[in-house]
Image (tube, rainbow, N blue to C red; front, side, top):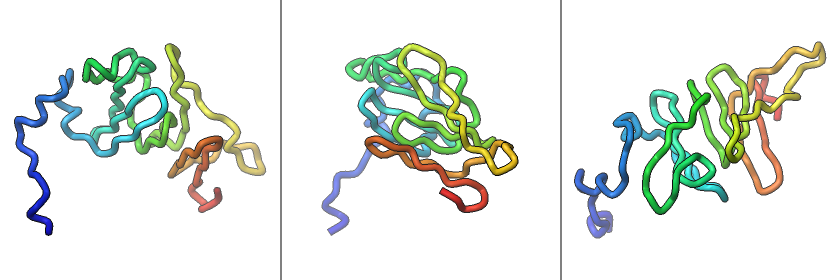
Length: 129
């Protein structure tokens, strides 16, 4: 019965401290071994956890610097609207993943990513994985 589930009230949002009201426009949330990432409708990326300069126990989200125009997130990998893929690492700038090139050595735009335990899959604009 759908009516047996508890409903959320706007006051429930006060459980976390949002440093930016844009965080309330979350589009996707992923958990990884280092914390939680939140991608907003506006393409911003926030993190909860020590890897992202915050703490899971403080419930305070931190805006991830140098990550704008985010199109997708998976684990600790970020896909931008330009088709570039980045890995988020502890206490350092995001690292661009290179190697997505065609037979003429031109960089290939990626449109979707998926992280597993020991791998990252990337789907390019031509449908190749």
